[in-house]
Image (cartoon, rainbow, N blue to C red):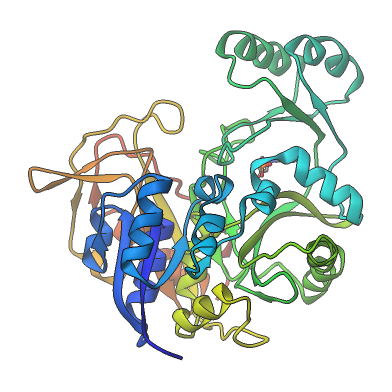
Length: 418
Ligand code: AMP
Ligand code: GLY
């Protein structure tokens, strides 16, 4: 292994977590991030570059490994552009990035490979939703906007009142012109992430995200309000079934179609009474999952990513720490629909025991203020989830942000354990 420079693209807590992990590497010479956020300045040099063109130029001048955090640049072909210039990059090309950006493509892949997923149809008009779908599909039913929505374009219709509200909203907001209608799956959700070169794969620690704004069933979907890892309720048998029914067939698809995949593959799995069902594929690390997943990797991350960019896996298993991790998102008042930004952020003393990852923060005249929906992700570590949770919330309670929205129940079910 040779030491090298690394460029991290993106500006959220996921990128801050990647940067923290890579800053600890003995192999990383210069660490760069673009466009980054104020938290990233603690560990990386920042460039304001924020377009595909500017990122390609920056990657060339940094002259090392590029790690693409979010999905949009991957869907836009950034990884293809970098590879065409001979630059190593972690992240798949545009063709296969459609696994995330096009739910219709993802469904067609799953149908071809017999990967269990909810029965679904594509619908092109509000009229068809209002007449045919409303009449024929039993409740509850799930309606998703096609395209990148970061988990926000999903509505679960549980009643006739929900139908009326949804149709009214779509008729006026015109937020989408194409929807996927899906049967509702009952079960527990888990985020499975692997490093893959398209032929083999290595599991990252499994994690659980909390996608809804609050624990209430009808609460709106968000980008994710908190996460924990490990996942004590995920059994060895569950893992074998995920390998056999989901990951194995998906890798077979990549091979059959000669798709060169070098990056993270994320499977949002619903564990039902009939085993795993795929809710979604993502072609990058989850956020907030990355905060807990990367914290539990007990190895230098750089060699894994550098090898992956060359199409190789460093080893057959990844060393995972026995420590548990709990991440709690501090979001702006009004998130996810209308986050209020520009408010002062102050942090107290016990913060030192947790890791605070920045997402939507800004420096204005040297003071830290909120600048987005999800503002900070606070990560607690400990010998078990209960301890990790205590550490995370102690730090959250020392953060002052007017109107902050925080879920208090991340990992709460493990409080009585250990
Ligand atoms: P997606 O962006 O497709 O992952 O959907 C976002 C969230 O909506 C998921 O993480 C689930 O919590 C929920 N969801 C999506 N599809 C279904 C389904 N078919 N049944 C139950 N819940 C779902
Ligand atoms: N936390 C879910 C996602 O990153 O898509």
